[in-house]
Length: 539
Image (cartoon, rainbow, N blue to C red; front, side, top):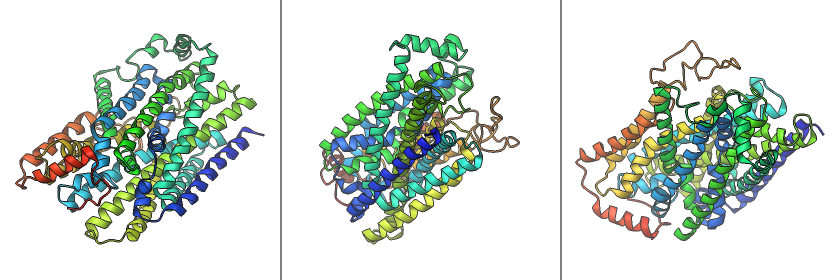
């Protein structure tokens, strides 16, 4: 059996399993609570698996390992940022948000503020963050399938992106949160199993001596000791150092504002189950990011120099082929197909979670509360959520096609920057500042969002990077003859995050709204105890 045939069989098997789960879940989805929160029927262990499945995206499995393979120590800093970020989210926001909300992030914000403007702002931010994140997953899917099927043409990659987009729309519209959660659990099992297997095989190549692995990576890349020290990617000049600081801020603070992660805590029945799911998630996520060291440095040590794509997104699949016996061998073909199927399952699970989050916010926050003023039926809400999934999926497909040359870990870092700039300030202020009010929340969300997205538009990500010297491909989104990159940093977090917090404070202290101290006290009790967490949040 050829490698391509084996790959297609495994890909189709992954799709068949996830489609079967989705159809099964559709029969269990009876109302809005089932569609948005899976009926709050998942155990702490199950939700912990799903959280880790949602968090360990293609950016982690493909992007981070690729960044390590290309930049060594500086690439590893990505995984540190992702892991530390998760702890910040758990300690500051996750359980409190779960206890004081119902279906979406806006439920918590709107509890003591004006419903319509707050929900409009929160829904807008949720959709923007989700689309940035979706771009990363779909770019990874295009690169992955093109490698496996030997179809390097742009048309083949575009077809793959469209196919993944259609699958994610199917998961959300048919399975809702129950189907999405079970797909994420299956994906987490596959991802951890595949990562452990490749890690063991890589270490076995060096007799389980990590020092030998690092030495071989430094030698094979031709970069010597510089590969194992800070500065290869971010220490080149002052701008790159500031860019790294900006990236770190976005990663560490962004997770606490990612809507698709935070709403996972609405799927468990009690606060105790939420804490249990946190413990499982920490263990799984921490173990995974430690293993990305072996994946990244293993790719640098064992793959031929220059064999990686410009963004490094294919490091893990090519490493699997190498440790399995190399190109043309049966073992190499089997492991390449297996790891690629795992990565494909990773992409499918994460895009489903992101699309569901966006669609839920559009239906629950915009349609039901803003347009229908709380008079929409549950059936109408779910119907609008399914329509929204089609629209959001279509937008993500159209934007992912021109973004295929960007590193997917970097694309995700932009999503983190938007979340940290727009969502996190309003959430933190609402949870811990009694005086915080509607104007402060709106200024924080819209101000942080506009600043972050605006700086990205005028950054090297969109224009001005030029062509990759190895592949000749454009490294920015716009054609090379267009350069509007007056903002020098690739990640805007160091500017946009403080702006979000500042505007939240400024909007609050300059507002003449009456203080909502009583509502804050009720929210505080709800957040700390979980009392009334399943009740409708209306004010």
